[in-house]
Image (tube, rainbow, N blue to C red; front, side, top):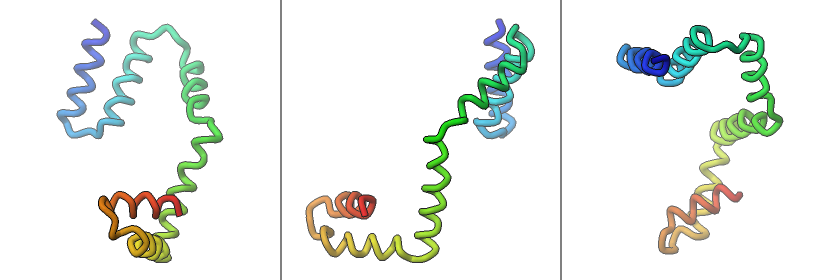
Length: 103
């Protein structure tokens, strides 16, 4: 019965145009608050433990590096260089993309 309510809330939020991530968060929090016997401090600790990862720290830095490369124009130069090297081969676009990513 609890899951029916949670799914109904989730689909109602989706029907109202709420983004999927917020709908999942809201329906999950509804379940935790209404039906779970776990203290809220444990829930907060588990959420923080899940995102407290040194590996996840690399994701924003890759995004920043890509933005800087795009703003500086070096990404287009890398793709042009890779296209001149291997663009003539069969499947050239895939090979160019792979080579540009390696550089």
